Image (cartoon, rainbow, N blue to C red):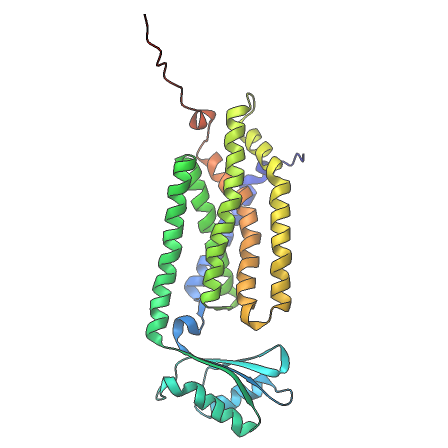
Length: 303
């Protein structure tokens, strides 16, 4: 078993977490989240050209034809393009995909349409509200579950760690301008589940050691618990990251955002299960008395 002094640098870790959370909140407040078509509404068209095509030229051509703010990217081969465009004023939104295709066929009549989708603004607004509500409900349910399984102090630590993970993951999308769609929202919810699982494993070991270890300060017991679960944490995180990196680099444009959100979330979640949840327990002065088993009442009848 390793003997790393994790809690020896807990104040440095706490300072790093606070700075990162402030930067993430600042990015969300100042830069905003770059919501995709799932939330804003608009059209998405996938096309294939007979020869390699420059996305920048296609974007400029669309803009010249009244279709501004289009996002044009290659996916897969250099001949394949995916075009995302928000609602355009003065244009029948349900015909937006057909208009995009018409402009592209003026460039090359042989262009092949692979997919065309449209999401209305009303649907996008509803998805935004439901997505935010889903994250709040998930965090509340986690707090109730941890309180029932452990104690209130563990619940505060777990929810703090989960909120830390969600804020930093969403903040990364705001900071780097990555597009946030329903797939990315699903990834954030998956991060909550992943981080919760890791936090419960660590919390369970901390509880057992507080009850079973006769000597040792809270810092020493938490350090021992973290070292005992370190191998399991690293193996789980590294195997998960291997799959996510494969999806990120070989999965294509359609799932790159999902894989990016999960990759960021898994790294942050592994860190938070060690330094955020445990740090909160020490900040709240966790003691052996908090986790002591209730004494059984003597039900034997006295003569």
